[in-house]
Image (cartoon, helix red, strand yellow):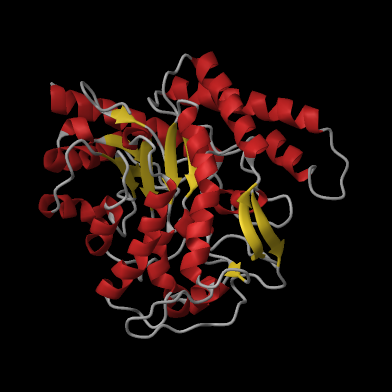
Length: 404
């Protein structure tokens, strides 16, 4: 994995705006509609090649495939970063409820369980805002039906991940880029669905880890950087009622880290980065858990780099955590220095200031400037690309300030 040896390198967190033609082509693949699969794959390859070219043109050092191979959902309408795995796991079938509508569960001291998505504490605190379609507050589309595990989990996405890899490598080759990253969902986030087969949530979690390991290995074996997306490590906090103690939550979260480390065992740490966020929906986020309370959980993941929100105004101040927490030797960080949570395009000088803060506490060579979360679907495409431009311009300013 590259590091900022002589300048601040740049990357992003994964999802990028999809072109209208690709969105429409995905819609045409809905069940019951005739489609030319060969033609679709040609469109997908062309779109991936173009998005890599555009990232290279804008100055990003470590591009991604924009998550273009992760459909917004063939069967139901919800977010690609998570839902794509439901089409790559065997043993699932659609249930009759969405996670927003599932019966509420309650935690007890020493026994932490997730409640339904609709019972988030942030949603309860700002119920009127979340219910108002004109408030600007959103959680994204809800699925009327949600997958349920009804049989042993297996990985069925071999052809899909092979196509993703081939398309991305074609894009990297065409753009003359020698390093790129591809995202994949971590077991702790992928397993947040109903389980009607395994004896316990933990058994289900580790079964998910074993299944998804095949995708992780495919990405690393292809010579790409694997990014493990695991918002659950931070986001689950808001989905537990009543609010647990920080110690109980860390114990609950460490099981998910253990499952992830089980899934990536034997894979080279310096080819893996881990992405943590507090959920990318547009909302107040007043019930987010502080980074300080879970930074040790994040650092327990056996990887080479850690990506996290740092431009989001709810978490920007938390760069100071690294004044007290030592980043393990040989590890890198990818702090978000532009945010998905606002339409305001960050000024390059602010981006440079944010980068310099982290450089001052962990060392400039160990910082890769990134985005808080995926920009695709969260801000208008025109704004998303402007933010990436500001990111690279800010990194150039920071380079001049830090290296002279």
